[in-house]
Length: 415
Image (tube, rainbow, N blue to C red):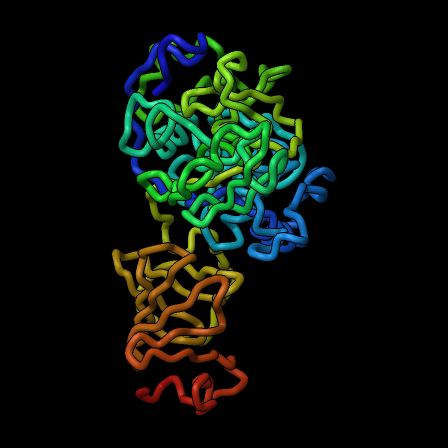
């Protein structure tokens, strides 16, 4: 991580260990942002006004929708809250909270959260740490200035005067896929002389150089790489305590369409360059790319205990009733069992892979069915490769309807 001999805050170059993680292949688009915002703002989230006015793509460009350009005009706080909203939307456990107790999800305001407010073991979406960003951007090529080596031209990335049709603006995400158009201009920087190639890095990531710079989790400390903690495993950067962050800045990485490769500017498109900005600033040249830790949440982590629920069902074991707002009431035995008793479905066996996001559930009379927070009341049948809609207990005894032929099935009868 880092680079020697260029910018003081990038040195010394050092080794860092990061655990495996997932990362968005492209920067979050305007359309992707708005999809989550639509849900979030009706579920207790609040965002700044500037995020309503991002720069989108030109309407005359017909190969991509205007909303397929990277999201921008978002401050750091909005980016963090949006990550939480994306997690909740997909049924994953949110990462950012309003205190170290982690009992209230961060959904509103501009809270300068400290490292202790973060659930690093949740599977939800979050901003990458500087170390994670640089690892993902570099790929397997260490010690180079860019993912492709030590040279840069306009056929590779979107930056100031790079020669693409959108100069002084963003390109659609993933634009440099071998079909990019580079135009000759007297002030362009040579890209039009090159043959277009797919410029995803070795991990398949696009736009880690240029287009928009990307917010990271870390607070900025110019001397951080000289601190021995900067080489610790899974470093999260300087751990500024809550209340001590006044006038402090956040890191964003990758450079944007307003940056050039000039050495007089510090060559800000290099992978090692540490861009900084105040967390409440919104700019057209800063967006985000999300990561997820390579972890899984406990099954239905967000279910609420429901002590007063006592339907007339026979069950011989002790345990607790829970309510899952999208799936209903179920009983979890105290003993070590993966079977649960659902108030409407009876005894079922939910797979614990994916938590609330990805539920393969074994029903004794039907076999394996898939559903999720986003799909319910629809189920996908593993054996006959068909979708079924749960019609509810009011339709008993014909409570499921197959999509292909609209035939109804009694849950207690074999499919």
